[in-house]
Amino acid sequence: MVVKAFILNLLEVNNLSKSFKDFQAVKELSFSIEKGDVYGFLGPNGAGKSTTLRMILGLIYPSSGEIKFRGEVIQKNSRKYLQHIGALIERPDFYENLSAWNNLNLFAQLAKVENRKSRIQEVLEEVKLWDRRGSRVKSYSQGMKQRLGIAQALLHKPELIILDEPSNGLDPQGQSDMRQLIKRINKDMGITVIISSHILAEIELIANRMLIINKGQKLKEGGVHELMGADDLKIELKSNDTEKLQQWLGDHNYNVELMASKIRVKLAENEIPDLMKKLGSSGLSVYEIKQLRTLEEYFINLTK
View 1 (spheres, rainbow, N blue to C red):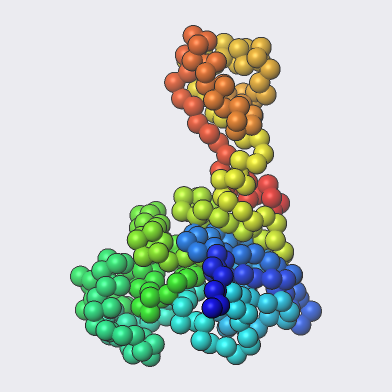
View 2 (view 1 turned 60 degrees about the vertical axis):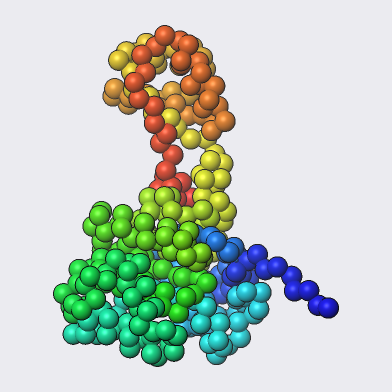
C-alpha cells in the first residue's frame, strides 16, 4: 500500500524569474504558502508583486524556475490546477448593465459550478450583497464591486484565493469591511489567502505570515509579528511629569528620546514586562503606554 505524504505547503515558488526584454521583473524568487495562511505579499510599486501573482495564475509564463501547487509542478499551458484557485486581480470586471445575480450566473455557467443557484446565493450572502442581487452593477459603489469580485472568486469553492490590492480605492469603512470578509473567508470557510496590498496596517491586522520583496527579489519571509519583533522597538510613554519620568528612565539606563509631552524608549520586546514592573513600583504618574513598532515602519526601513 502506498501512503501519500501530507502536503503542508499548498503553494511553493522556487527560483522564479521573469524578464521582459532587457528588464528583469522577478529574480530567483522563492517562497512557500502553508494551508490556512493569510499570507501578506508586500513590496513597493514595481517590486514584481503583480508579475509574480500573474505567473502563479498562468496569465504569463516564467522565464525560469518552477511553481508547485499541492506538491505538483505546474506545467506550461496547464489549467487544471486553477479549478482550486480563486483570484481578484486589481479591479473586478463585470457587465455593468447586468445585475449581480446575472453576472455571477454567467460566470458560474462558464465554470460549470454545481448547484449553481444555491451557490450564487451563498456567496452573495457571504459578501453581504444578497439584498442588492437584482441591482445593476453600474449602480454599485467601488467597495460593493470589490466584494462582488470576491464572490465571483469564491463561486467554485477554491482552496486558495489570491487578492491583489482588494482595498484599493476604498474608504476606511470599506477597508474595514474588506478585512472582516477576508477573515471570514480564511477562518470560517477554511480558504488559504494570498493578499497583496500597499495598505500595510491591513496586512498587520489580518496576515499571519508575509513576504517582502523589492526589485523582484526576496528581502524577508516569515511570521508577521516574529519579523517585526526581531529588532529593537519603541515604547511611547505619557506622564503628568515628563521631566521627572525622563530623569528616572535615564537613571535606569534606558535609551530615551524626548518628543514634546511624550517620551519614547527604545528597547527589546522581552524587556517590556520588566520596564512595566519597575514603573509600577516607582511612584511615577504614567497614564499612557503605547507600542510604536508598526509594519509600515518595518517595511520602510527594510526597503529604503
